[in-house]
Length: 138
Image (tube, rainbow, N blue to C red; front, side, top):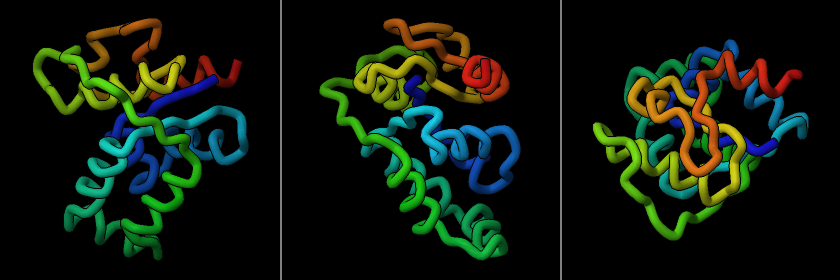
């Protein structure tokens, strides 16, 4: 099964662990195919680079660059040809939808309410972390 993680999920995974990190572990174990895009990697670098998050990573004895490198190594990178407007209130969310469509993902995993409200787009189910884990561990 292919999944795309929204940046908020990846940040939660690397900074706080928990259920979001279980998705990273599943990808590392080969249980799922994790997909991303250059736009999502850039966004991840920008968000993790914020002082409060970068310092938290440093306290965990890692760095923004190490987290990005690990994530980029685990994920298949796709380059969407277009980024259609899908999420009315947040154009940035359209990049994660475009990556999910371009990769042929089964699930797009997010904690973003406007994106969750979309529900499904072009056969990609948009779900929360807990729902993704239920689907993936069946």
